[in-house]
Image (cartoon, rainbow over all chains, first blue to last red; front, side, top):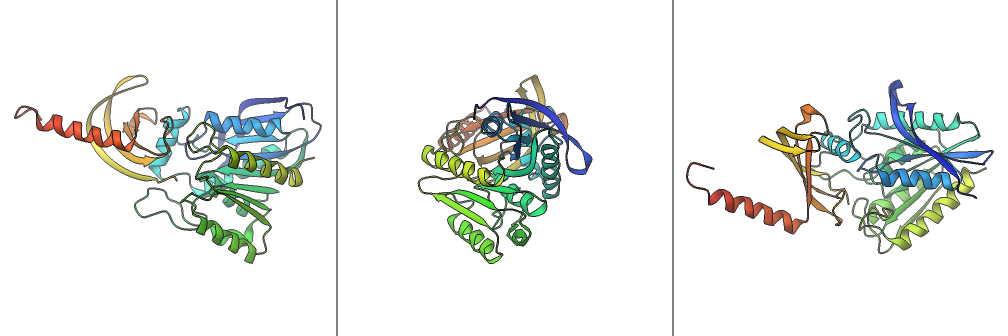
Length: 247
Length: 86
């Protein structure tokens, strides 16, 4: 692995045929590669998630991060866009699925694609990663501390999302779940419940919960960052995608 | 955690954003992860004019202690104003 890559802002066809903005990073000097759709966290299409997208390219995957807030705030800075979408109650589930399916199709059509595409999402994107993997054909899915896969948002929250664990029988690929044992959304009990639901549905999955870590432990630019959990989590991701997407 | 807890109010006044002064129509107040402040959770206030787009926004992120001190300072200032001014 020489970690050479190229990254740029592109547009691709998402839900309902809409052209939306996305950040694409591809490995250089590789004849064949798998793809990863990166779903950004609630704070949006930001610098830190672009950094994560480049990290996948450095590890040999073509990675595409759609700007899920593009329609709501085209051209706005990521934090302004996130505030606008937050006030509206988040991204509609149907639109998210269409955008991830479009992103996966774009990755499969790249020169050098091996046809395999996974998804990963952080925070609100963790739930969306599970949702996408239950709603469109993918090869591997990673849920990083996604809330409300199990359980409803507390009353009074403006977020217009509900639990989606009932979709588990439709999960199209193996799922890797990475959670903080000190997180409240999702709580350890909710993680256990999802684990049980997937087991009962006969769906391949592996969950890891890290002691001493809470929500957003992968975020290197936030106080929530936990280096041991993040380092081990990244290793779990490389092993998981290495088995299911690489080559 | 992402709390998503939000209070919204209508306001009259002005704010100065990235491109200068604009008329304010709305304020949202929420406790959640900050974009910039070095804390896990902050009390965030967005002064907005949604009709002018998402960028018509003045944002602040305060620790809970700072937010309470701000509320107190606002109350003290309003109460000590001469009669008829506030």
